[in-house]
Image (cartoon, rainbow, N blue to C red; front, side):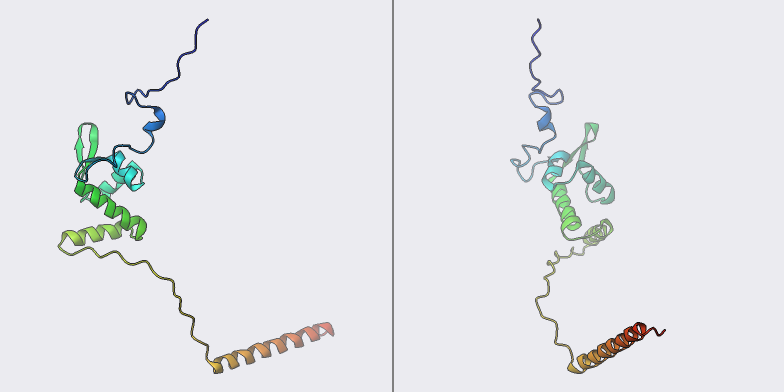
Length: 163
């Protein structure tokens, strides 16, 4: 009888790696220096977006230009990574659209400073102003007149009269 094959522990794409770890977060990204190049996988894991989102941003924001090596491997410089973080913040946290971020980056490139992040709106804690007494009296009179009209109509229907 033949013995069953040993369980597969390696991934052909990465020597010594396993298939489960290949799709997980990149382990070495957190230990890199701030000036080190980041791969698209490392930067996408840091930002919490898919790699195709970063590639899309490259098409929409000409300022975001990572180095591309053989096989179109992208390597983001520290400045590119910082720009990607700002774009991500503007799009996800501050509510800008892609066109809005394009305008901000264009204005910034022309020498104008990008706006400071807008503070989060604070819900109003103030109580509404007290209504005008004359207005309340007029509204109460209208309500009472409507009640009387409805009561009269209901009484006419009960007596068999058409309205």
